[in-house]
Image (cartoon, rainbow, N blue to C red):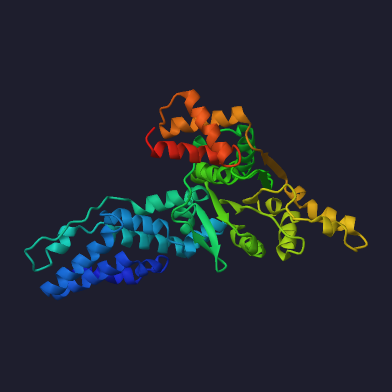
Length: 397
C-alpha cells in the first residue's frame, strides 16, 4: 500500500510528462489507487471497473498503452530535441527520473490491486510488458526525423481546421502497388519526393490532367509509401492558402518532411487567393524550408479561369495581365500531365485491378464489358476502371 501511495505522489510530481495526468486511463488508475486505500468494497470495485473500462477500449495491455502515450507526448524536452537545441543537465535528469516513474506505473500488475480490494467476485486482469522506457525513448529521439513527435508520431495525414492542424484518423490507405498505368508520371512524383526526404532540392509539383486519372491518389499513395521514412501530408483548401506562411513557420524546424497538398486547384480572375499562392510559389518554399514542398492537382492547365470577354476588356496592358494569370502553373517547378488512357492502356489498368480484386473472368469478356462501362460514363479513366471492377466484384462474377 505504501509503495502505491508513493507512486501516486511521484506521478503528481511529473513536469515534462505533466500532460499525462490528463490522460483518461492514467486518471482512472490514480482514482483506483486512492480508492483502494479506503477499503470500501463498493467504491473499490467501481474504481477498478472504471479503470479497466477505459483501458480496454484502447487495448488490454497497460504497459503498451502507457509507453505509446509517452512516445506521443509533445513536451519541452522533445521539442528542444526536434529543433536541435541543447537540453541541458537539468532536463536530462528530469527525463530520466520521470521515465522511471512511468515505467514503474506501467509495471503495476492487476493482481497487486486485486489483493487490496475486499471482494471475492470476478475482476478482469490487464496485461503488462517489461518495456525499458528510457531506452525506447532515447531510441525514438535518435530517429526523431523518421518517427516524429506528438500527433506527428501517430498520424500521417492532416487537415487545417480553425487555423490548427487536425489529424485525419481514417485516411485514404491507397498504396502505389494498387495503382496501374502512368508509371512514368508517378515515377516523377516519387523521384521528387525522395529528393525531399533526402534533404535535396525538391520542386513544388503541379499534377495536371483529366478527371479520374489518379492525380490525388498518386499523392496520397506516395505519402503512404514513405510515411515510415518521415513523410507527412497536410491538405489545404484553396480558401486556406493564406495560412501557408504560418504553417511554414511552424513546420520549418520540424525534423519530418511535409507535403502541403492542394486538391482540385483553380481560380477566377479576381480571386484573392490567387495572389497568396503566387507569393508562396515565387518565394521558393522548398528553397527556404528544405522539409516542405507544395503538391497541387488541377484539371486545368492554366489554373486561372479566363473568358473571351475578359480578353476584350479595356485594360491598357491587358496582355501583361493575361500572361500573369495564365503563367501561374509555370511557377511550379515540376508539372506532370495525367491524360486519359487510350484503349490499350485502359485494358492494362483493368487487368491489373482484376488481379487485385480477385476477379475471375475471361479476358475478352472483361475488356468488352469494361469498354461498354466506360462509354456509358463519358470515357476511360483509372477511376472508371476501379468503379467497374468494384461493381463486378460486388455481383460475384
